[in-house]
Image (cartoon, rainbow, N blue to C red; front, top):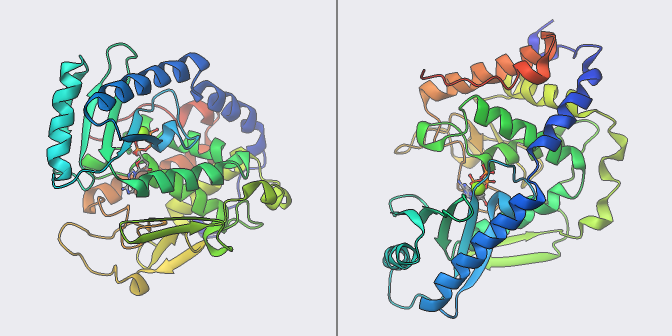
Length: 338
Ligand code: 3AT
Ligand code: MG
């Protein structure tokens, strides 16, 4: 039997309670949420003094339900910036925040999405602030709506994000994948599962539309009408976690396929024109952004880190298949560079 056809162990479901207990321990407490809100309020106050018309949106995991106790706070300011460039506004914002006693304030202007990063001594959180990046606000809402469809998505994503942080494969600046990419991988996996756990909201009649920077973000967002969608699938979280790693270790076709939650199926690299390296974009692991469809979230992965990622997926699949105590072994801290 090829490894791609392996069946999961008979006692896999016996690990579900341990995994669910871990999920509970990763959820942010009420106190944590309160401190997050305090941080957001103090940012709003600082920004309001200089830019009274600015609207503040939360995005990322503090707003998409996928936040854990380790998550940062992501804030998007929606504002008219006139003739100034985004970078000029970010530099001015850095000065405003420093004057209001935020710490480690740093404008990161060379990134694809320029941000100000800082930490707040009062709440202890770090915070990224971007300007007019409404695509991130839209993809945050999409992820949040998916999360309301089946609780197994949240559980799976919490476990995968925790695993990725523990195993040091959640660092885009080192060539591994972002939390956002891992959540898309979880959604795609649950859309591909038989019977399906999740539908594909972007192929349904749109009930939500936001157009920004020439990109239309449209999908069916009346998720309360789809509550029974995944009911036919009875897989436990343990079986799904095993299936997720099995898929990324042995079943995903890295050479030819692109995962796409927009279409709810895999696409070919050929049709996306992601077959050759352009600049630093190597397209070794292809994860299509649901709205910015020309954007491959796997583009940060290089020849070395794809090997590390695949070895980690294989290790995780093997731990869930054979280890006596997978709920612990799977998440053992490790850094491939040390
Ligand atoms: P953590 O819980 O903080 O690890 P997160 O979901 O907040 O996870 P990030 O902090 O990596 O994830 O990213 C914050 C948000 O920024 C998530 C998504 O709305 C947006 N985002 C991140 N990376 C990308 C990307 N490459 N393309 C488009 N949007 C992105
Ligand atoms: Mg975040």
